Image 1: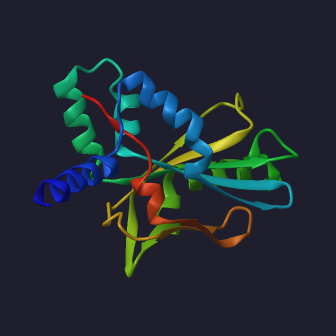
Image 2: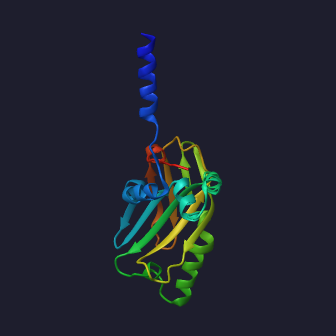
Image 3: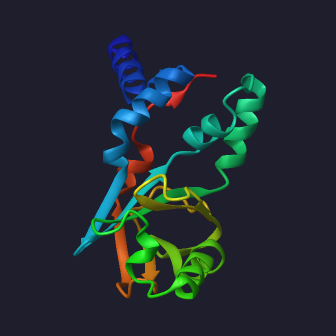
Length: 194
């Protein structure tokens, strides 16, 4: 009887473990599952889409030539943050910031806000905690892409609770936009084999 209990326990333990993938397989897995890690809201011609970025993914992208020890350090560094990507697109204009700007000065003020002031207007609510934005970065794409892309890093939180990424949109006047992420998203997916 003890042998049966032991075997069942071992099987349950291994069935709950995450699959380990090599770097290329991990990146391919993420590419095919990005939509599952994303949430989107549309307001007329505008679309706000946010995507959870696992620490292993960010570390792998930033450290593509790293050996195992360097990659382990990079992952440990990225685990200090809860990271998301926000894409804002417009059906009417490939340069989304021109959607509301009436002149060059207003356009530059909006770009400056996204590059320097947005951190105060975005946060994550996880359980009973509010996680502040530690840093953000607007990717300059020089109109080569039909969206604006902003990367966010928040305090890590416990990742064992459902959460909301909350953006107080001041540029387009949409107010508080909430993106719901169930805790399963943070647990989903394989791990990176190092």
